[in-house]
Image 1 (spheres, rainbow, N blue to C red):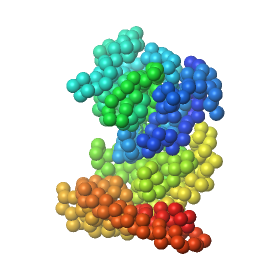
Image 2 (image 1 turned 45 degrees about the vertical axis):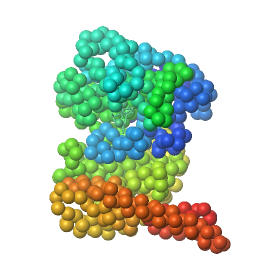
Image 3 (image 1 turned 90 degrees about the vertical axis):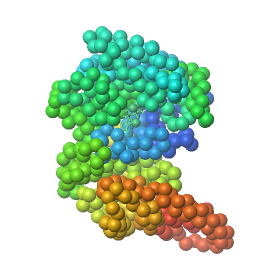
Length: 515
Ligand code: ATP
Ligand code: MG
Ligand code: MG
Ligand code: MG
């Protein structure tokens, strides 16, 4: 199946179960506690909290069925906050900063039985995943840690019936997990509850007996999380029951596609190449990078924790990072989130600068990143029309960000190389140096950390933060002064590009007085 067919078959399946198909919400979250939309359930929070009626069949663009059931594919970003996967990107094959989460919801309608029945039916009967490779996890609290709620016997029994009917031992195929893995929370506050997940054993023989579940390995990955929402997490760490019980599921679209396509329809796990990047979702982006760079993606993966020893490993990490990051940048900008100096905007700028830095590994010294937007508009524009409609704007924004960073990147890298020549192995890169790279050359701290890690070094983060705090205090003081002096000037001179992050305060003031 192509990825489009996989996405469509998910939606068709839930349509046949009377779900209303709703559009993805924006990556800009409604909740002030989130940096980006990080799960399919975000847009339904007011319904879970009982603040809004479940009337999804009347939503704009929805394909209506029942009011109390919804399904969709949701654009998600996990690069900051409670769910932050940025550091894994490029180094593994199944965590992205931007990904699509397929989901189905019940708003006070069906609960665990239907959720598990339908998950099993879709995965094993419609898509035909081999049952013996599936593992379900259930919530098993550790009361000594104060985990909320009780052991999820109901979910256990429902999964046990499925595995038993397939001639498989439920004791092997159901794995317990406590709050960390089996109690889902969107952030520190908000609707939440115990969850039950499906994991797939991807080893050549498929005989790990659940030992690799939730062990952070690509040989056994989580594809679907079924959350049974029944609590609200309050500020201060307490949990209150919600007015009704709900189902909230999230499935990794790229992961499911990687398994179905990489194993050639489950026929060959021994020679399988299962990676989100080895799918028709990422292949067109890789084709474009190959064409622009003249380099080839070689499917290598550096050893765990390393950023690549051989040239090809480094190139492959760069391919993955760049292909991941262009999706994050493009869809964010299309949803009105621009790279900038603070909050989520700075997260985007950091991600973009990482991509530009990785571009050097592929030999790019001129803006190249923005050129990849065309591929996304072409391959994803049908599902997310905003990327087509705002393509030129997205390209313009990325290009000017690239141009700005390119001006200082090479000099910063040169200084970095000079500096680390003096740092003894096992020692730290000094905080003041990391701050200089940030302040004068526009290097976000995490980029410096990443470069240092490539050389086996750590960065003195505390020293960096100290200088950062001092600078903030200085600029706050300066800001107060400048508002007074600038607001007395009347001018029609347009704003010019005035530099990098250190001018945060000035930029703000310029906005305030409308320059
Ligand atoms: P993992 O344990 O693999 O990090 P998770 O438990 O954090 O995943 P959930 O919050 O349960 O993920 O999200 C629901 C589903 O979304 C997951 O089962 C997975 O298939 C998918 N998913 C989660 N994070 C990512 C990501 N960073 N990139 C791609 N898919 C993801
Ligand atoms: Mg995770
Ligand atoms: Mg997990
Ligand atoms: Mg999960």
